Amino acid sequence: MAKKPTSNSKTIAENRKARYNYAIESDLEVGIMLEGSEVKSLREGNAQITESYAEVKDGELWLVNAYIEGYNKAKTFGHEERRRRKLLASKREISKLWNAVGREGMTLVPLSLYFNGRGIAKMKLGLAKGKKVADKRETEKQRDWGRQKARLLREHN
Image 1: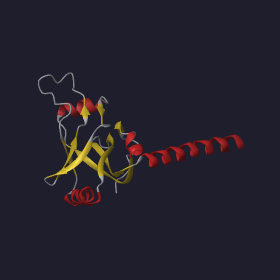
Image 2: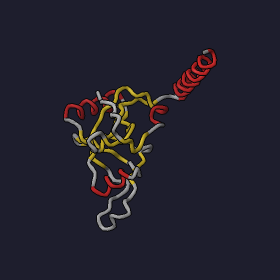
Image 3: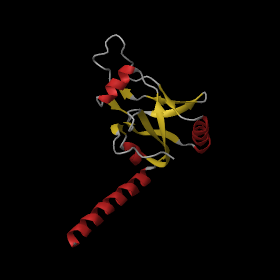
Image 4: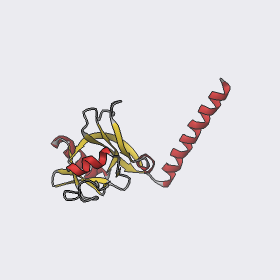
């Protein structure tokens, strides 16, 4: 669905806990509506999306609880740090997401926030199902075994 960020893109914020807490079924690249001071703050790398989520409300896609730090030089025209921000996607994609969230009990989790090759702020959203504790343990076991296998192969060669 979504293209991976190109080599000349700049990652601003990444939600590393998302892949641990959720089983990501698919991902989608969406645009994000920002104010000028928010863009300036993002260019400095002052954002956090670990506690945020996305929701479909009234046929629109919204990012909730994402933190973009205030920009110091924009004193009079600043922005609210944890405001709801509109995400830009096609109506077809929004309806698919709405169906998945409503019927299948899935969650929309922000995976990363970045500037693409053209300098436009984009967000990678993941359509995910929550993991149970046993699933999280299994993920850790697989990760540890992968590391150990790589270590053994390195020592063997």
